[in-house]
Image 1 (cartoon, rainbow, N blue to C red):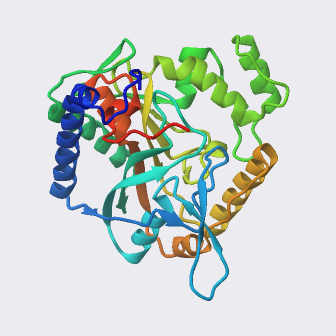
Image 2 (cartoon, helix red, strand yellow):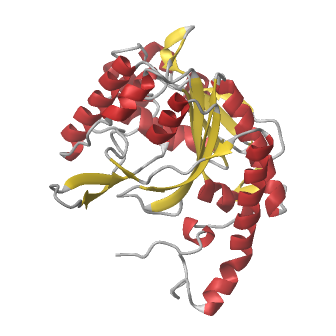
Length: 347
């Protein structure tokens, strides 16, 4: 936070209280929205065998001590995804969770080591249905906050306007003048060609940047700042090679059924048509962990129970939305700490 007073100082709390009250109204309105559509609100365990297996997500580790048993390594989840998919396999058709999640090595105006993720799933539904959900939820949150605009660092978006739908290939062409499609393939994207195109567009690269690193540099520098201006943007059809938990698009396996939602240049949500092939999912997660070990010198175990449950999971789509970020944009708060009742203590 920008002030030096602890959050519990009366004046500091009084200054933030209107935003915190708005947060409460937003949460209540969203709960009503999901309940009206027959979603069951679930509560899954924060302590997991695996925190998630994405290369660049870092977890908090601890030990489980049980009488007569050796210490067992456990992790605080980075997402409730694995547990929620097990509930889909158990037969739940529509679920939602306001999940407390934990991510290490993340701190800034939009990042906190502990935050609330709103995550929901629809069995037997295409991922386009989740895009529609996101557009509706943005409008519901804004109405609950008593505003008709989302705002962050001088950028604004109308929460009630029809979203802009933009494929990743279109975004790279429009905002970075890069032909991303020419650099895509399902398994082995063209790193050399992509690097040359990015360099020609003025993107500074490191010699050891891989294809995904180059993609991230272009996305952060050229694409994201242009998204969600005036209205929210649904950025969809992500490269399959960067979508370890999403199924390939049937008409073009180079891309996946994955989308991200942006407002005011801020990523709010990440959604998938969920991959349900346990063999392919194991291969992808193992590859993610091999890359994590190469870069960071560590890896997390695979959740064997999750992989077993995938075989019983129906076709489904799911999305995770950063609740704190949504509250920030709906209230105009400048920092994620302002919208948390008890912001994380600094080291």
